[in-house]
Amino acid sequence: MKRADKRLSLKLLYVHNDSLVQNVVSPAVNAMDDLSVGVEIDRAAENAMERLKVGKFSLLFTDIDVARDAEGDGLSLVREVRGESGLFHLPVSIISASGLEADVDAALALDIDDYVKLPASMRRVQNTVRRWALAFEGQNIDWSALSPHQAKLLRKSLSTCVRIFSKAQSIRHPGGTVEVGSLDFAMVKSNWHALLQAHNDERVSHVVADLQGKDLHRYRISLKVAVYLTDFFVRVTDTGAYEQAALINLLGDVFTGGLLSCAGFSNLSGPLLEKPKPLNEEERYNIEETNVAEIRKVLEKQPEDYPEVVKQICLYQAEKCDGSGPMQLRREEIPQLALMTSIVRAYLDLVHGVRSHDTKLSKKQAIVYLKERSHKFDRELLEIFIHQVLPSSGGQ
Image 1 (cartoon, rainbow, N blue to C red):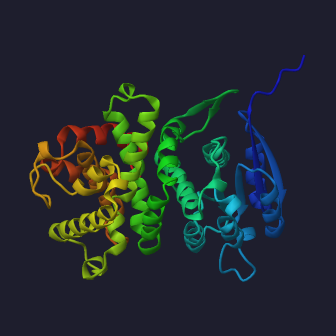
Image 2 (cartoon, one colour):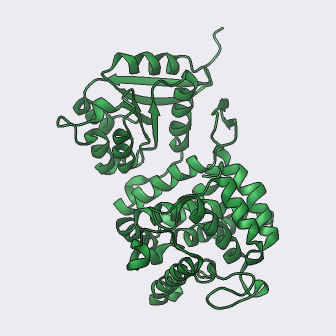
Image 3 (cartoon, helix red, strand yellow):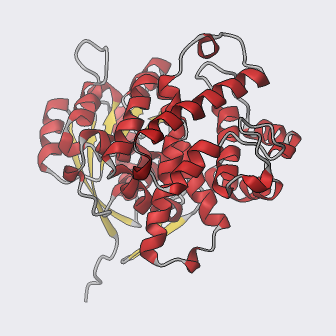
């Protein structure tokens, strides 16, 4: 008797017109024995778009030359996908044999999820398929019920979760275990309820969308703050002490606070943000103080609409344990979530820059910097962040 196939089934649309690309992707996908991957192939962007609209795909994997428009000045297929309301959620991975930096920049600007540059190993291609197809598969999210702002922000946040949590080697599903290489799927999944709650809040989604439109760099950092902070919170909290519904609501509030932690940057302007030279400590302090002041204005418009957890994160995040923050509060006067946010924000500002043109530190350099200034942070929380949160994230 033939044994039933219990492998998890995925559907992938693969668009290409390059034999080199085909010779890499097709053998890699066909050799995946832990997944049953249904692959549909097309060689024209117009046909691919029609298929995407009527089929239920887990991933779009496209050769960059097919995705490019006739004039060669953009990625028309990806742009169409990102603009189609019924496809907001679809993960997109680009593959290219050209290796041109301009290709990478153009693709990233359109919010693709991954970019595979050839030559690439079979395992690299397989992990790309597993990572992005599984990340969005079977989550029962009603994307049609979300506004365009909400749907785009949720998709980008889920993508950020996948990028940040990148250590576990396998995940379980009803049919067995799937090897995923570098995706900590469990940590992504633990954030989904928080993500959904935060993004179903129309008010929050519009505040963050405003930041995205005015300061894309800080918008991207705010997503990372939200994911890191939620992970951090889970690691220092006795989650077993909460009823499931209460815990989901709490995680949603923590995630929302992280999303709004950089919201003040949407109203910031002036010489400090445009200054070509690196910022000194006093200038960084002034920018952070102004960010909190601007967030306060947003929260005070409808204070009853924002949970206390969100207020703690956003309004006290600039306080330091040595009393050097804007309100000069000491360690015992600062809410724990604000202490955690202070650490997360400090680290991300070091490795990504307060401004997009700032010099970035490596993970190792950033840790040294934080340790040298440990008197400003809660030392116990700093150790947890360095030894537990960062290892689970890869330090991105």
